[in-house]
Image (cartoon, rainbow, N blue to C red; front, side, top):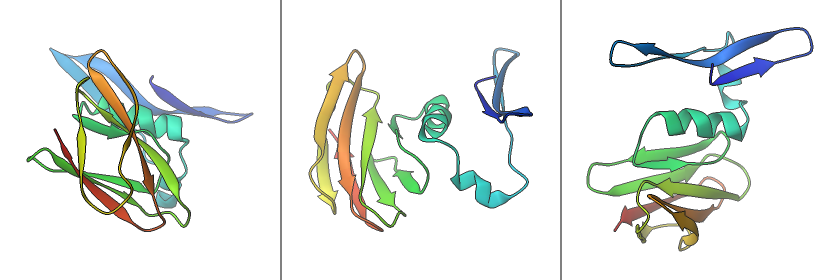
Length: 133
């Protein structure tokens, strides 16, 4: 079990992973009330995004969208009613981001072996597009 929902009287799995053949089988529990999909903590959403194996991921709570394209570009969009700082994780240690439109220029927060993290400030309801160099 990778993530679970806990309360004083019960718990249930949110994300399960098990070996299946030569790969992994993931099971994501969908709540009975679809609007609850907007309520998981940022840590759970970051875990879910990280398990997808994408070259770009975001580390934040709900209502922030990531749109990836096959030409080394992506868009981060806020659906929140307040400004939000979105850490964007790239799978390369030497990566650079070039702003294409919208938002403030990204600030490199940290980099390490095989990854770079940039902080992107998004205003309410706005988006920012970037090219990975």
